[in-house]
Length: 116
Length: 118
Image (cartoon, rainbow over all chains, first blue to last red; front, top):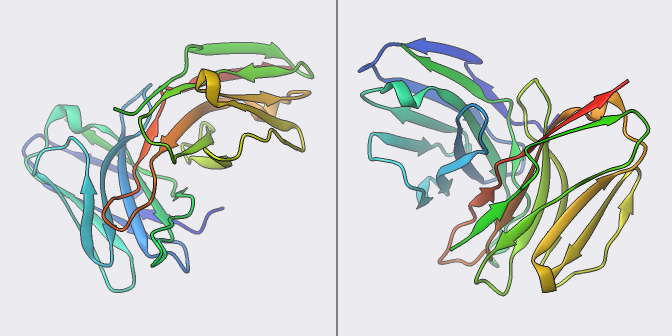
């Protein structure tokens, strides 16, 4: 196991609702990245947080937002849920050093979100 | 633009056979990293190997080996003497240089579903 945990495991919401997903990073890691994985596809990068700030974003609308806390855990918030938001949401943690070097990303088990 | 292609959608092999998973990548970066991840039915992505663009030395780690060739932009992965527990979706992935002004996102291929039949 990687030491990256996510909650909840499964979630069912209806269209238009809001959802918050949580991630605890591996001990010693300071960077958290979020990915969306639709059924049968590879994970797609949503955004990354480093030192509590968004440090890069993929092609996702602003209704996808996040937070990173001082203990490096993170939340992913999705507003105004749409049917296409149904997916496995993966969190990955890694260590970014002051030199700019970033180590391998290690993934959590994911949260399966179903939007009805 | 960065892109990862895995042409094999599904592969089935009989237990103990060797299997090679193909990966072709595109990037304009001179420094980059290549990865293989495994995703069993449980859903968690499991890190297998990482290679940087300056290290084309191919290695063997247990039953796993990989063949990195910059000339053809390929990063193939081989499992020797496959086992039923190897059944999973395998993703090849690419990330760019980790600079202070950049960020480290991983670009995944579409995955290859491997079934090992007993």
